[in-house]
Length: 268
Image (cartoon, helix red, strand yellow):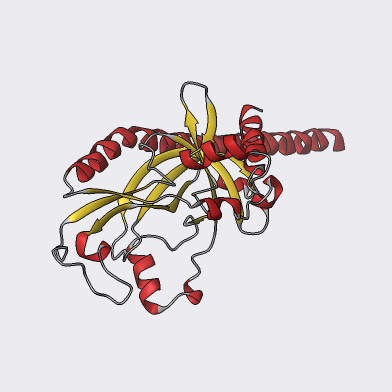
């Protein structure tokens, strides 16, 4: 009499397991569909974002080119090795620039908010893959009176206007939206360590939060994809030319090793 009961029990357990498995598969499928939908939405917005940002740039009063690095700055740069870019809060990621936007109240040194869709984590937190992260980049839109001002707060004669200018930093020329880049970033915008004005500015510009990062020395640690060679090269053209001329004696010669490891890791 016990045999039918035993068979019934086994069948019940089996059906329960099958049901749970199907529910898990359905849940995973739903998650994958959601992620795919998010990525598709991000990709579809790139062309629109590029058009809007280029319109903002074309409407400015003037384009200003800021100076690059001095030879002394290049020779004395403290460049980390590849493994250090994954230590603690540091991350090295490859992704696509999805959007730029102006950071308000930038004084003297304009910066641009940059959103990157992470496609590969080369070093650091693997959970960042497929995330949309926000960081900042040197250069960008700024009011004329906020740029042409001394540290004492005195505006240059004839520059006291609210007209926007665009500052292109020669050490980090701004890649087009849609470009693939490698950037070194870290969680650094900790509200408790900022002044009230800094916290207010960071919140207003969307630079505080779990997916907000500070760029790590982009004048040295930012690479852009060369579409002709499909290789990632340092964004700083002056730095690249200096490395070619003085590779053996310069303290930043390990940048070439970094670049080689980055390209090797991306191809893997």
